[in-house]
Amino acid sequence: MRFDLSAVDLKECSACEPSSYSQIEFQDGQQLSFSFTNRPAVVTVPTRRLSQPAAIKTMMFTSSSEAKPKCSRADDPENDQYSVRPGVSMCWSVLCKNDTGRSHPGSLLGDFGHIERLSSWVHLLAGIVFFIYAVARPFVLTQEHTAAESLTTLSAWSITFAFFSSAIYHVTSPSKRLSRFTRQLDYFAIYLGLASGYVADFAIATKSFQNTSILAIVDGPIACAVVAVFFFVRRCMLSSDETWDTFLGGCTLSFGLMRRMHVDRGHTGVRQSTSFLLSISYFVTVPLLYDNFGTREATTIFILEIMCMFILLIGMILDNKVVQPDSLLSEGRGAGFLACKRGGCVGNAHSIWHILSVIAAVKSAMSREYALTLS
Image (cartoon, rainbow, N blue to C red; front, side, top):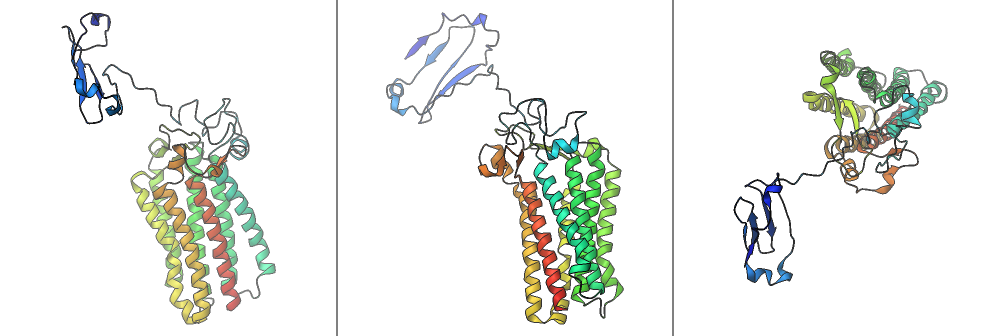
């Protein structure tokens, strides 16, 4: 079958080049193709195939002159809900109402939400709870002022400081200038919490450092200090432009998940691995637990700590490896209850990791209190 397209005036079409073509694909792979040239265009069609409409599955027309549709990005000005407008309170915007001056019909956060809201409130409330615990502990829970009791109280204060520091960081995270410093404060508080927790756990396992060398006590805090100093010096050597990055800023069906932060770039893996190693340093005290507490009590304490570590590990995997439910939510899928437009917050991987870290901190404090009752 032949079609004469000589009557078509191709000179009027400036986008039609000699190499331009269109194509129809059939179910069995046969194709109808035609090209535009300065000569009359001829199209050859397999007649037998076109006589069977049921055999045609899809038709896809493509052209080299056809422009792709513009992609809406989460970090475009009309969709950006992370940046806070100049002159507007950052605390109010992140914690309560983020008025961007525009409507956001496609956002998971509604018109006045912020991606850091849930993380900020989780750490703020956890900091208040641990503050009350740290203040009340010497008067309510302490039976005898031993080294283990005092260090457990100190650990409670360090966890309080870590939660408040993290809340400050998440509130100031939209600011490229402020978050450069508050992120370092957050990391310093985390390393301080890990160091004090290690010493407190060691004091409990050894019943206030009985028959214990000084090196065994200080090697954990020294390791935390080395890691903290290394990353602090490294961050000071880099400019804000080098470390400032956007997460989930590409094309997305559901907006509101985009966030920005100062990242460690090539040292991200080093940061994650060292943090993980420091967090599992507790397990060097396990043999001492069995020596000083007996099999039954030591096993109970050990199981409580294993549960804490398991919760932390799940959070780390969700936030750093799987990155769920962010990927599903960005595609317009995922659990609907994770997004609360009325409250202006969404349960992304990072905020879920923070919730799990609070649960792990509570369980760790409970395991210490239980162990102290057995001393």
